[in-house]
Amino acid sequence: MLKSLVIRLNRYSSKNLIPNMTSSLTCSICFNDSMLITDQESGEIVCSSCGQVVSDTIQQSLEGVTTSGSSKLGNDNNNRAVGMPISVARHDMGLATLIGKADKDASGRRLDAAMRTTMERLRAWDYRTQIHTPTDRNLKTAFSQLDKLKDKLALPNSAIEKAAYIYRKAQERGMVRGRTIRSVLAATSYIVCREMGISRTLKDIAMAADVRPKDLSRTYRLLVFELDLKVPIIDPMKAIARIANKAELRETTKRQAINIMYEVTKRELSAGKDPMGLAASVLYLASHMTRDYTTQIDIAEAAAVTEVTLRNRSRDLRDKLKLLN
Image 1 (cartoon, rainbow, N blue to C red):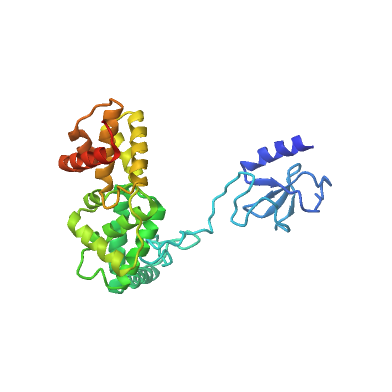
Image 2 (image 1 turned 135 degrees about the horizontal axis):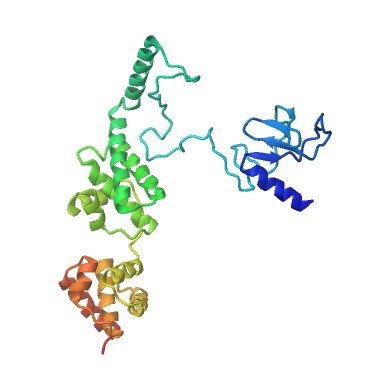
């Protein structure tokens, strides 16, 4: 019995036909109630033996089929009644109407000249009402640039949602006035990367947003102070893996650098230090300990720091941790 049921499920799943196992109806021709199937699209109960339509409405909902048309048995149908989800990264939250440009009615017939003129006027006014205020125009421009910044930095959708939320708060406080939209968006993106632990430095975001690092830093400090944000510090452990991959260091060097960094954080020697410069100096010391020799120039370029910073940090850590003695 179970085997025959599985065979019937496999046969009907590709056609959106599911066996009707809950209805008490019986076919009036072959008098068989075990061969009834339910068509979820048309809502008909049909006899699979003779083709008789037993009922044109679904009397009981089949267990395992959701109201959106998707089956728990693995048969995912098109959710035609589901629209775009609400998102704060859109200027209208995704709730505005949209009048299509097709000049046909619901039946597929072409509209007459008078109705086409009316629809064009409605379409124009619908577009104007969505960006009627300066705030809406500002948000539309900002979120369009935020979408481009997302592609450049490869940020997840959750990060973009949080960045859009912070930008809306800054826009309500009037902090965008007198500043470029790109610098505020770059600052919000940097704040989100710090909060979510995404390995993106301030220079990376400044380069992707095409703003000066100095302007980005100034806007970042303003947002943190005015919005009272608690931004965590950058984890230098994540910077080690990033620099090691760029400098093409061995795995043993990376593991040794992690051990040294753990000791550095334990003794609180990382306070007030640039995470990228600190990670670069730790990797430089670890490369000498594992005999994976590399030059200071290569590690400094991979970490985007100067050689002077690398030498000073390495000398300080070597003296305090008694390394390479």
